[in-house]
Amino acid sequence: MTTIKNICVYCGSSPGHDPLYAAAAETLGVALAKAGIGLVFGGGSCGLMGTIARATLGAGGRAAGIIPGFLDEREIALEGLTELRIVPDMHSRKQQMFERADAFVALPGGIGTLEELAEQLTWIQLGRHSKPLVIADIGGFWRPLLTLFAHMREEGFIRAGYEMRYLVAERVEDVIPMILATAKRAREGAEKAAVIERL
Image (cartoon, rainbow, N blue to C red; front, side, top):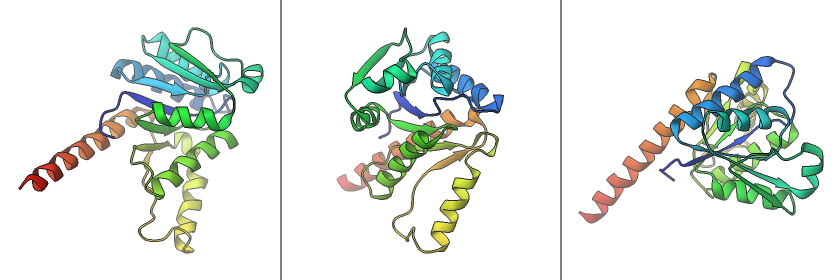
């Protein structure tokens, strides 16, 4: 995937204790709108999910929410979205978020965010897609997980040839430039390969 039209952002349905997390979500939402890139997210109105969607919409951007019906009662789908899809279950939600997205970002969050991030890392590891993925390590939030990844490598559970390809941004302002640069390199690589093939 070399064209970035929509970015899926995984993040918490809670705001977290550190105001830095909500500030990062708001900054990313505004940046998406300014870049003309649509937001794909879990559809909830609370926590970081609501923050990033409101910021995106408030800056004139597009936000598509995908939420299971049973969660709509707990997280309450955000009103005024560009698009809202109510789906039957979590599997449908994740599949549709994947299909709509050209890249992925993990902001701070809980078990659900971790599970979504881990699934995308697994799919990348198994060669099921090559969409860019950025772990936004805001305030060092994901550092324990990154340490665990290193431990897995050292202990032989992430083998050569099965590396997880991901980017790490310590500043939220770097997220979109990193994704666009990765997409550009992929596009140039594909064009070069096509030229070689024609020779």
